[in-house]
Image (cartoon, rainbow, N blue to C red; front, side, top):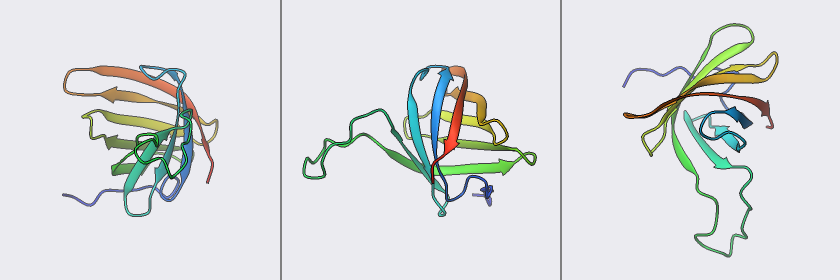
Length: 119
C-alpha cells in the first residue's frame, strides 16, 4: 500500500461529529484518529454500559484512515468501514462545518454536519 497522509489537524485528535443531513441525520458519533493511522468511532448517544457487562458496550470499529490538508482551514478525511461503506468528508476548522459523501458498492449519500474537537 502507498504511504497514506494523515494531516496533523486530525491525527491524534478525538472529534464529535453531529450529522444534519444524510442517512445518519440526527446522530452524533465520536471519532478518535489515532497516531498509528487508524480511526475508531462510536455512537456518542448510546448509553455506556459498565465494564462488568461483557458484550454490552456500544459497537466500535477501528480501521485505517487518510487525511489531507486542503487549505489553512480545511482537511479532507476518508476511511472504509468494515461494513463496506466509505466515508469521505471535508472538515472546515474555521466554522466547524463538514460535508462529504458516504458510499458503498450499491449506495451513495451526500452528508453534512458539524464537528468539534474534544481532545
